[in-house]
Image (cartoon, rainbow, N blue to C red; front, side, top):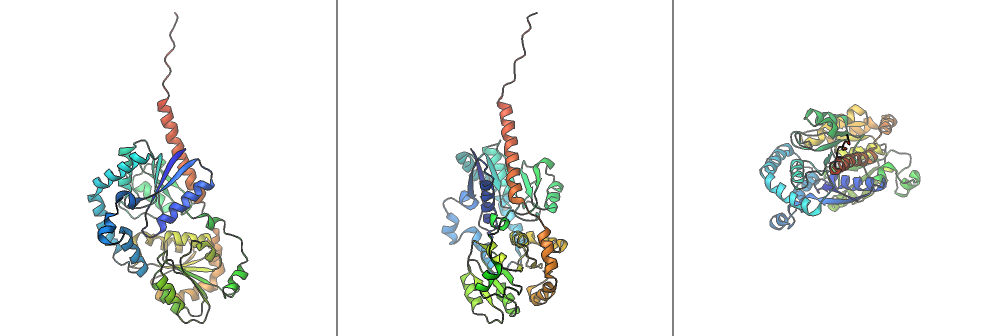
Length: 391
């Protein structure tokens, strides 16, 4: 049985979700692998020194920024982070290599950005024959040195044609660039549970015949949700607040004409999307992909506050005709007024987009692993000695 390690961390939540989705996809295909989810932060800081000194985990500051909506300046902060990563590269490689020597993976799959050179170099040092694969959880790369590390033996799995072209342009060998049809999503988004939608909406106080919006800003929520809800008093809304209970309480106290359903943390986002007709949120690759997979048109923003790696996603929304892109959610009432008369048209376009990444990514990984195993077996087979002549 092969040991396949999936590397993730807690920044933003999407990387953990992708690791979980990939683990479930591998299990669903019955691949004979032992899947191990590896928390990158715990490997490079096993004693938790950062938390002891600072009082919080490294990802917490980033997640708090998302919850507050204060994401202005992240492009500059990203450059500082990448500089720090380059400075600490030897230490990162040393700690990661020690981990690989001890755990002996047969394949390492990265679902995180920024640290892929350290992951690659450490694996090449500790286990040089072990394949290293990066599965982009973004719809586009944000070069340089974000997802794609040219000049290495990195395999890259890309969920969009744009990311695939970026990898080739960066100099990756074509045979190491693997195109799939979308972002990794959990099984619930591919095979949603059957339910009586009208009955389920009525039980929540939602009119089965009136369009319902779903507002979501990741697992940490965002205070911009309060502004959106305030601007849409006559639109029925489902508001998913994640672990932000203070936000949930604030939203429950808002006056409204239309019914509201305020939900705290839930692992069953697919269920709530089944009950909605359109999505409002930030242009994250996971949220957009989940909404479109469930047939929901999207309303997102692009401005100076948009995270740099997510800006390309807003162009994709426009090009595919699956929603609207705004400069600010101060325009949300106008946008909803434009979307609702064309809701069926937007829904048809969303339904036409097919995402089979949950099937395709395990297949690509299996092919990479099989090729490596066959190459290793060929090296082990001794060459036959030439036959001796009796003449």
